[in-house]
Image 1 (tube, rainbow, N blue to C red):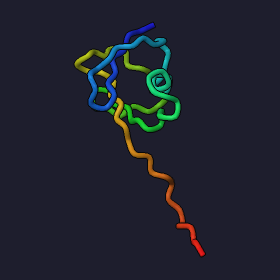
Image 2 (image 1 turned 90 degrees about the vertical axis):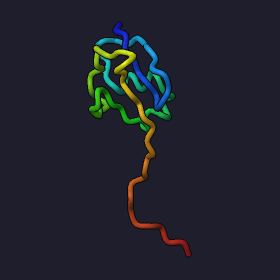
Image 3 (image 1 turned 120 degrees about the vertical axis):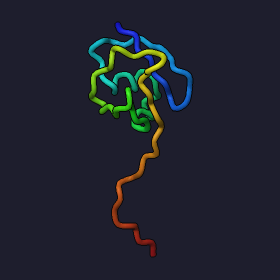
Image 4 (image 1 turned 135 degrees about the vertical axis):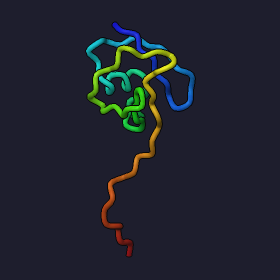
Length: 83
């Protein structure tokens, strides 16, 4: 297990343990309700991390993995016609 620091939105950084081979999706699953996982963008050290990115192992309370809630926009398409 490794210790990583993470921060949700503007909250205080928190430390958690996770397997060293875990990816960002695994960390999201641990932190958030499974229905909320896709609603967060992940950044570390100013870089946006993809869901399959390996967990950075050099996090600190001064430089945590930051999860920011985003608005999910449904895919655009033709508007439905109502008669």
